[in-house]
Image (cartoon, rainbow, N blue to C red):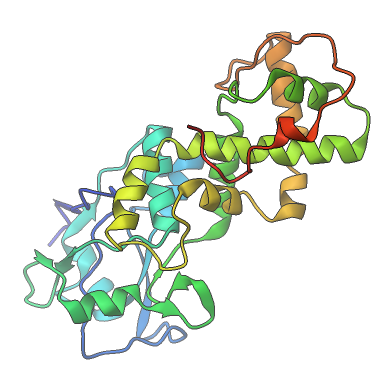
Amino acid sequence: MSADRQTPTDVLSGLPLPIVPDENVRLPIDNPFVADLHHGFHPASHPDLQSLGGKALRHSRLQLVDKNYHNHTERSYHRFFEGPPIPVNPDEQFKICVLAAAGFVPDQGIDLSSGDPEIVELTPSQKIQLVEVDPDDQYGRRELKYRYTPIHDFFVDYALGRDITHVKEKIIDEFVHTEHEDRAKYLGHFLIAQTAVVASDTVAEQYREVYDAGMLHPMMPSHPASLVKFKLGNDSQRVSLIPALKDRLVAQLDGSLTTSISIIPLQPVPDKITTNDLSEDFLIPRS
């Protein structure tokens, strides 16, 4: 039998539905002969999974599954399903990846136990199995994973391309012109955090809905801006993004870059920027 069915996706998140786990079996995480990782977005060779956003999707939802339900028996998932619809719009890709990174778990799954796949409501014990926290990673799940690097790379590209015109003009002005390394680093951290705030606007409404419904990992913040900023890297990693952000802003000012970053034309450099100009917390969303 050739796979000819489209993988069903969750209405709230856009993520492919998980394979329903066997409630009576605790899968080993370190024995590939018994269980391995199933990519929700497939096939790997699909042209829409080759872009930066496509690669992030590909690695946004990995599920630890029994090999008998993955590839190796008459009841295996890949005998039936050719893959889910793959969004190509970066906004949609970003929404899905944020919710996946937040540990979203839907209420439904694909039951393969009968040999004829069907969409079913997850039982409480099946849901408990899927939401279990990874004992080695308090921010992760044991059976639902994602790969950090593709998510990070896509989030950097997406966030640094956002419009940050809500930031005071003199802050951007000083960042572009200052020759003081420490000051540039300080302002750069602030502006990068603001790109995360703006990027998170894309998914904020959906995120809040599923957060309130208890469908995210318990360690997730109440607003996606904090999660997005964290996925851009730690403090030292975000320092490496500052030159790229500056280049984009300078290029935009020169008119040589067509990107979603847009700022007010520069005015003479102010003598000093006060602490009050930077009073908005890096993680507080815009009003």
